Length: 300
Image (tube, rainbow, N blue to C red; front, side):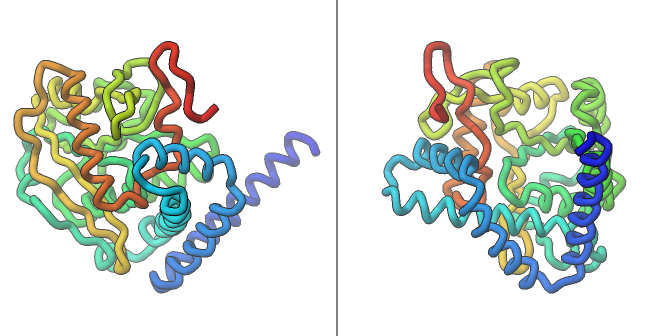
C-alpha cells in the first residue's frame, strides 16, 4: 500500500471514529457507559502491554494488596478509562443543557471567585476533561489551559474545539513555553495544570510517590511562585449521573522557597486523592520509567 493510500485509509478511519462519537453524544448516559464497559473489558483483554504497565504501577503503589486484588482493580480501571473516553462524546458534542445537567461542582467554590492568580492542580484522573468542561461551562470566569497538539489533524481539531466550546477559554500550546502562561495567571486566568506524569529527567526532581522515588515536574510550585498564585486542587470523579468535580481549599504555606519540598508535598497530597478512588487514576502511563542513576526500570 502506498503512503498516499495508507493516509487515505487512516483519514477514513478517523472520520468513522468521530462520527461514532457524535452518535454516542445523543444516547442516554447509561447506554454510553454500557458501551464503555464492553470496550474496557475488551481493551483489558487485548492491550497486553498497557495492562502490564498498569499492573506494575499498581503493585508498586499498593504492595499490601494480593495479586487477585490487583487484577480486579486493573480490570476496573480499564473499564472506567474506556467509559471516560466515550464520555467525551457528550462532553464535546452534547447539547449545553445535557452537559451542564451531568456535571456538578462541589466543595470550596469561593476559592475560584475573584481575579487573584490561581493555579488549579488537576491530577490525571479519568475525568480530567470533564473537570475542565465543568469549570468553563458552570463558572463565569475565563480559564487557561495547556494544549498538546495531536499528530492527526482531524482528531486535533475535534479535541481542540471540544475543549474550547464553553467560556471562551485561553488555550496555550505547549510549544509556546512559559511566558504566555505566566501572563495569563497574572491577568487573573486560573491555569488548569496537570503536572503528575513522568516527562523524563529534564526539569524533573526525584521525590517520593507512594514510597517510590519518582521523577516529577516541579511546575506546580514554580508557576505558583512566579505568579504569586494560590494553588487550588480540582479532582474529578466519575459517577452514575456524570461527574462530580470537587474544588478543594487552597493549600496553606504553599509554595515555599524549596521547590523539591513543594513537589514532594504535591505527590503526598495526590496520594490521598488517589486512595479515595484508586481505579479512576491514570495507571496505564509509565509513571516510574525515569529512574535515579544506576536504578533499573521496573518495566524492563
